[in-house]
Length: 495
Image 1 (cartoon, rainbow, N blue to C red):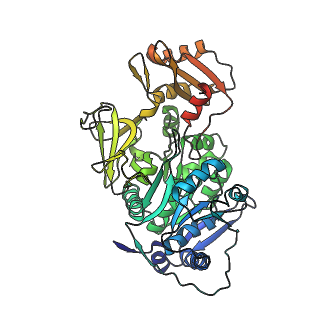
Image 2: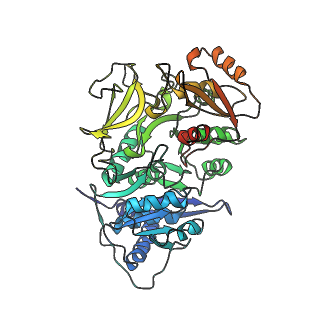
Image 3: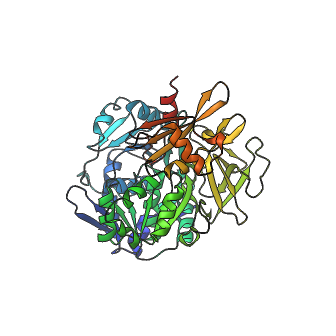
């Protein structure tokens, strides 16, 4: 199915409306592009890319930090019918080399921040340093060849965080992004003055999804180079931001800032990427912040379910109802054909137009069966169809035959006034199979006995109590704020 180019259509319909704002952390100044200005600069990028020989079907690695050029390049690659490969700037050379080989990227585009890493990869792929300014090829106008979008073609390849084993490439089509954006808009509503703040990495699907939603909705995108508490709060106030997407650790840091009240100017705070603790939810309710807990995956082009602000107090712990076009099932862990009843914990299955077809180079993967994505996440549905996410199946701790969900224990640990961060994992044990180990970030030298006593006071069953405790300065996380549980396990139990 063909569809008019999203940006070109908006440049015609809303040419003077502000499409993009970029706030530099260097001079704290803002640059602005209307939709017509953004379209013109994107076409300059198309000239440049076509002059380099980039053509339809080419796969282009993007090893870039947040900047207007990132937004423009993504739109320009659409007009070249090339496929973007989104690369995490925090990966090692070995990890990037594997992803470039797996995706068969022909070019690698880097910036001044990432060029040293890219130089280590230039024997594998053609590296191009993209400057801060729009390049002028001087070769004349290369008129964009493709002003329509084939919704079924692949827009880009994202790699999963790789918390276990090799990361998997997730090819997402324009249709996946489009239906995700429309479903989100139907759930959240669209205000003509909406301005969505993007402070997450654009190589993450949750970051790029904001860029797509903004252009499809015809609203404003405000981009920051990175997450910085003060810059986020300043941008909300000065740019009249109405929407923001955060992970819980980001929101916690914002609430510690003296200017946290700026968050009250927002109409929605989408909260995803990791479970939000009951304490964080309670604090947001007390402060009357419009939080919207969400659940989604790279494989689903971001959001799948979202809880609306007025539902948070009534459905605490829930990630909300499925967005329009999505369906959920909860099935038995061992027998996927057995659908579970209300309140029973099982594996979450998702079906919908935003769900990928298959993993890259793995068409026979059993992750998609009969049109349903087997997420590997564990959760349950209540009587009204609201989703409650419990844990990942790979995180499940089986100790003495009992199922233990780490997030339940982590929520209790995080309610301790001296614990800033917590991760619970299973450690091999000859008698029990696995025992519960808690890794915490705390300035206090808490003992195991103190931690166990606190958990008991919170009515945690004895078999769930931590048997080991470790105090670290920080916990390893992905760029999107998710705990790297496997890395933590590897540090506790090196091979």
